[in-house]
Image: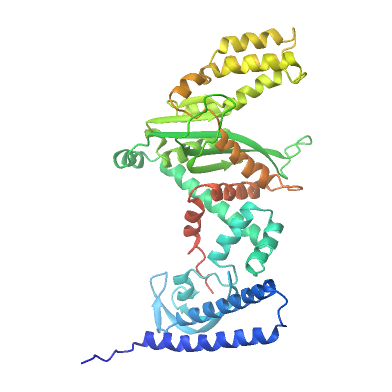
Length: 463
């Protein structure tokens, strides 16, 4: 004996929608195929199928949204003020989605208490009537984080067949940058919460070895402080990462860091403010409890002052390449001469082996008398001030990285490739947000986290 299956109202609705979709799909495909000329090649056929898929997807999304409405809207729904909002009518809304422009209808309610109107469907699904959808914002923002906005607009339409203006991509990218900044502000607050720090200490196992690296690059802004100011501002960039890669046995060996779990952070801010961000992101990565915390950077005073302030127990290493560049500068006047090449080879070897006294003496022999600004005198000062951060044989013996390639890559990808595009002059706020969006896109898992936060941000505005 077989039991008769009971069809629920939801099943009936889906069946009805399925029949309607089938009819829509048949009409779209028939119209498209009949309207197209005999194809000249496969490329033309592929383009036609892509257009058909976009139309089919648009139809499916429209009808799926229609299915979310109750056949008979409730007479009342709870209002944010605590009273009951009453059903008034069905109203039309417009969405701009990854499948193109969508028109849909949903129930509108008005509260007699606070006199505010709303759309429960918009609130439940995070719809943004009159704006781009959360998913379209996610994709266009990611495109804008990697390319100039005009190029992003062209590329996005080429790849998806959906046209999005450069201004829309600009807005989406800055929205993600602002979201990243909001996350950072939350981290800063938590990083000064003694109870939260104690809870982390009790519940989170310390990492074995964690690296940090810091640097700065220049961004051209329209902010002028005086007549001589051309608007160039420091974009400070940092990164937390892990790696088991060790330094090569020779300075000319393979320097592939193979970093993992990378988290970039950046800001156009004074060192003190950036220090708060360094501390907060470090707390997020459990840096205070790391068994080994290593900071690799160049010789900038602001960097080591921040490290001394926030992570005084960290191992401090001056990046090998920055140190070696000071030696190259000493012989820059005659870099190809046999004597200069011999000096550079011998002195680099002494630096690699940690013989700082020999390095300093070699620079002294090339220093110009009574000229404190020559490259040799600058190198002497540099090596003298940072000699405790250049114990390279000791660091290599412990398996530490001694090159800051991770942040160098970040500076290149964030500062040079994205922020220094030809002719770009940013507002300070715009530069900060786009740089933060770019940093998030390069960090492991960060873009998805920001996208998840933004899905339900734009509940329907009161009508």
